[in-house]
Length: 377
Figure 1 (cartoon, rainbow, N blue to C red):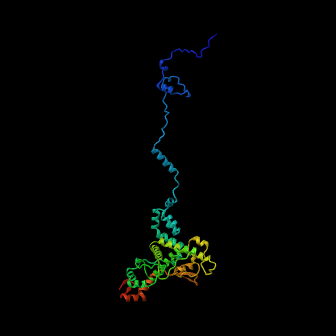
Figure 2: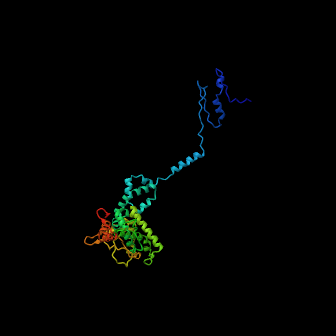
Figure 3: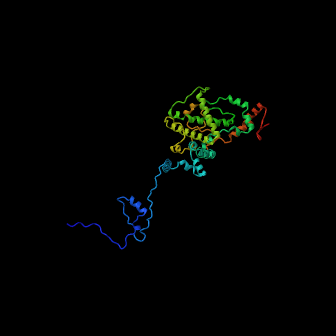
């Protein structure tokens, strides 16, 4: 039986393989030792450069960074990417000052008081431009109310010589004898002028603020608390002091003045609507539509209507009060409202100190006032 043939062949060459060719380079030794069973076999280069070392290939991978610092940075970047868009306030403040001013002039005063609480920059901007803003808002929305509710003149705006006459004991004692309204705190002679025009202006503004305070009672039908004449409970004194403080703010701040006019317009619209729902009330009233209410202006009060100059001297008059717009009268021949002159304050001062009343006071004090120099003679 013949033996199987071997599975190898003996190859002879002309020259025996050199010992240098049979040696492995260090890199080849490392690759052969780390080579796995499934790794691809790369043929060794042949030719003249077969005995040269192959270049090393760097197969190392970047180490993953795991530290508290990198984790904080990663969370911060993720939070920034998910952050919402900047608020509307920042976009509003990026507008030019002129454009921002025009936007503020179209807002109602109540919205401006809300914006005062948004940020310091917006508050400072509104307060610095409040005179310009309030002037445009009043001329746009409350023109007739501004003529019906002029502001009392502060005492520092009165000439010094006349200030002393207004604060003289003869006049202050006379004013103390006058019985004030239950719903109005008397004006302070050291703060505002006490001429006849300014006292009437003070009373009308106080009544407007007080009338706005009781609107919820009038709408719901809850009775307004009453008390005998000549008495003033603590809650009434507190309310009158609060109303007087609001009117003083109107004298100092144009924004507060515009806010009071807005509140009185709301009181007027609520009162007209309340009386309109009363089918038994056949009295003449102002024509007011829902468009007038939504417009937020007092233009509808320029239409013909019932007299509005009657002053409610008691809160009991609020129940029948529809529109309280003093200092004006309807001229039938001209078909328009005529308002009190804006210089009524100067006229009253001239009449008080240079007319018959002034001469009586001069005789009581033993002095006179020169109308040209406003100084004592």
